[in-house]
Length: 191
Image 1: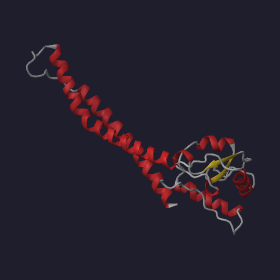
Image 2 (image 1 turned 180 degrees about the horizontal axis):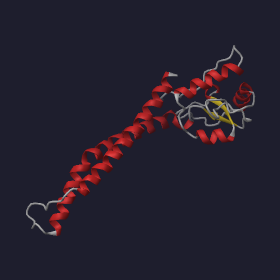
Image 3 (image 1 turned 60 degrees about the vertical axis):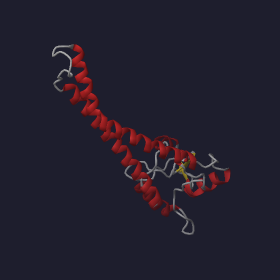
Image 4 (image 1 turned 180 degrees about the vertical axis):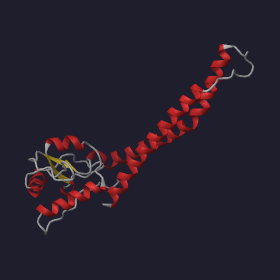
């Protein structure tokens, strides 16, 4: 549970930081373009080349720092994606036995959220990786969630929030026998 929370919030923070840097970049670019341009040294005051050189210098100076920050965030995202790829379970599909057990555990109904944190309740058609396979989720019964087609499409390959994980585990207490585990989500270790 704590690992999923750490991963979820790290990725959300990275998205927020990238959005902030892109806004910073756009504002810096716009302010540099709107600024009064003075001709570069050595060029005549009315020279078009001098005006363009001054404009270019102003834009480069304004966007250097946000540009470097965007590159650094891009490198961090690439490293995270590379680690996800290295974590991928070599087995992509659940076995028939895992599907049978997972569907039986869910009572044949979708386990994902419909609205306001309630269980969907439509007939389950798919076995979904709660922690996405593409992000290093294991193909195990603990990571299996019964899902209807609509919920499966809506979830896509997003990492569920820690709150979604808690709500699913709380809902499972209602229909999973007390002797069985209600925990959900499992990630492959790095090789």
